[in-house]
Image (cartoon, rainbow, N blue to C red):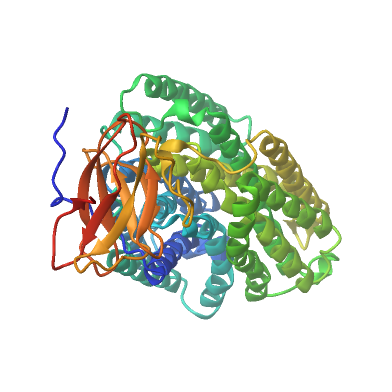
Length: 588
């Protein structure tokens, strides 16, 4: 049996003060919003890109496509790397790459460097699953629902809030100022994350699957590229059909390889569990619904009033009409936490999708004034925020803690697939129903209404999928967060129950200390928070030797080896923290 390490090499565990927890959540949410901004940064100037870059329309679209493809590849890959080598480390890498891409774009007006820079910006989307993973690993249980909700919603929050700000910059400054602003945001996010966020002590075992990463990247590019370019190339063009076929072939081979790999990039056996599979499929539908409003409302608001249905407003007004989408997504996070705690994430997912359907259905009659589009955006933001907030909890409740980053990366990828499908399908509908006006083809009101119907139908499919998810709160005994504060101590006959208290060197109880159970190799298997008197209780996942670690703000983390699985429960453990005394002892 492997030797249990002594207290000295205790892994870093974050502070447990509420202020520290709030700081971590705020910084990670800011980082998520920052990287999400990259997806909509150029929307206000998208029609002017061919002139700005001195190229054709077809080539200019690669500036947007590169960001999408890079983000799709980065999310599962960075999630897995974070599980293996440290989520904070990879989060900082994502932000640094984003800043580098922003600086490159700010310094060039040439097509190829711009595409490279935009791809680097899209690479930062890997920060979303990494941030969710850090929250899962380091925050107290009571803060997790609202924290993960905010992080998951940051994709929409960043996209919604970026539109008016980007429109204001683009209308009153050189368009390169957009990239200067994104570089400043990225630098601020990097600095705050480096300074405030702790490194997660949780590590997955195994190695990084480089062939699997290359295979997934190749398959995704082959599949998503014709989705985004199909309208331009033609859906029956040899290039479109060939890439679709190549994508399916590559991903099939990749899946077979993953099933045989001892350390797969994505654990497909976990991914086909009912909860994980249905949640990911519902995420695709939510991605379709989220992007539909972004395609329809800004165009409708800016079309000339001479069309008979356009609202004739400026780019900035169009952005302001979309701002409620991001604001309400942010504001529903605390509401989600209360609803999810009481009814479970499945119920909040269904509620969110119901609100989205109301927003799109009612929106059919609210397309005649700018303020009406803002109301539609607010309702849809509330629904999308509730639905997006439910996804991490459903995924985390069904996977091993060591797979959190990769699993959430795959879920984020599914949302990106949904937005890609939405862009392709609704773009095709708007083009097919366009009407002539002043010598050009403009989207028609019929096309806008059909787009809303498509989004409603996608959400309806998501509702059907969600009905087959397990009801109630997800719970897995090996995933920690077992004992809420104030719960009675475990029965003494439980051979896996660990109880005790945390005090400092002077004998004073340490309230709200983090108590973490690790394997001898340093992998987290359980975690809880001590109560006001320093008392704690958690349950080990099975028999064997473990390392019990306590830490608190202002105290030196300390550890003690424990053993579970005997005829009776282990004796209460007393963990002594503080700068004046190192070590730990068993209570008499």
